[in-house]
Length: 232
Ligand SMILES: CSCCC(=O)C(=O)COP(=O)(O)O
Ligand SMILES: [Mg+2]
Picture 1 (cartoon, protein in one colour):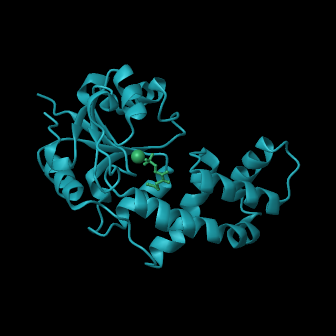
Picture 2 (cartoon, helix red, strand yellow):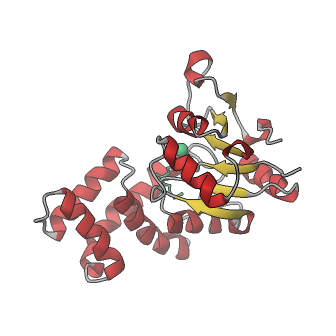
């Protein structure tokens, strides 16, 4: 019998919200002005800067674009252009070992066990796919990149839209009912369930001091760590 595929979110699920909010975001926010100034002629960067400019009416200086991006970071806006640029900036931080990506010990242990048991593992995060690969390649539990068979970001669709999960199931060539999606955000789980996926709400006290119970779970199976997730 085919083992369920496990699709996991990152921030608030495999890893702490505080690492993303207190390490990754400030690092990117502070590095943006110099990064844009030094890389504005790089096509891989300019394509995203032009996307941001287009959303600001098209006539923007790079300084105005930087201000917009820093505002989006402050708002935790999950904009694909911002996430792509953040991923390019974070590469320097990981490769220079200024930081390692946080991974909860229960998540690292469970992901390795599930892989050994034959489950296919994949990631769906607002962080860009390159940023996800950097993240899992440089965790405080070592290089976990080999555990994962596929990575998805908001280029497949936004995380609160059911079609995004339909697209992911199609790209994985698996029936949605054979996929278990793990996330800390109930609205993401709602969208995954609407697409036919199984779901589990990861409700960690470190990230959510007030437990989400009863109606707050939106009927999703609630656990406080990966140790309590039952993939089969
Ligand atoms: C894994 S790359 C950095 C994470 C990030 O930028 C982000 O916004 C994570 O949001 P998620 O969808 O994983 O909750
Ligand atoms: Mg999350």
